[in-house]
Image 1 (cartoon, one colour):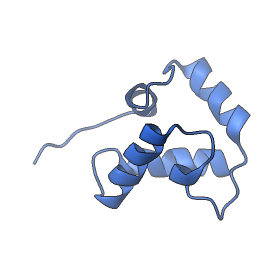
Image 2 (spheres, helix red, strand yellow; image 1 turned 45 degrees about the vertical axis):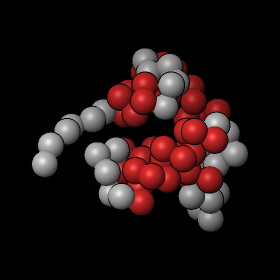
Image 3 (cartoon, rainbow, N blue to C red; image 1 turned 30 degrees about the horizontal axis):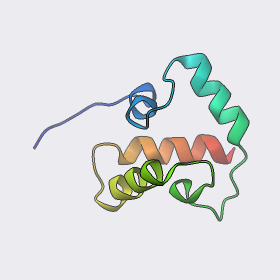
Image 4 (spheres, rainbow, N blue to C red; image 1 turned 90 degrees about the horizontal axis):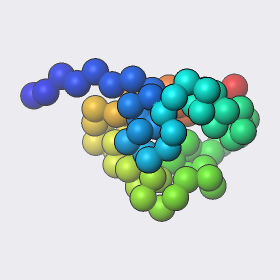
Amino acid sequence: MENSIHRLCDLFGQLGLPDDVASIERFILTHRPLHNAVHVADAPFWTTSQAQFLREEIGKDGDWAELVDILGSLLSK
């Protein structure tokens, strides 16, 4: 089993989004607050492939799952 340590900027890069700190902060400010009833992967601003990746990682409790949860929390605030 590989123990990968990913950072939020890595998740943004994986999603094909700009991954510098300013771009991440701007993304979060632009897209929040995400209603608590909306799962982060179901947010309307993802592309189909981005949403699929987020769902798969949460579903399999993959390497990225913790960061997806963190992103969901940041978007919900």
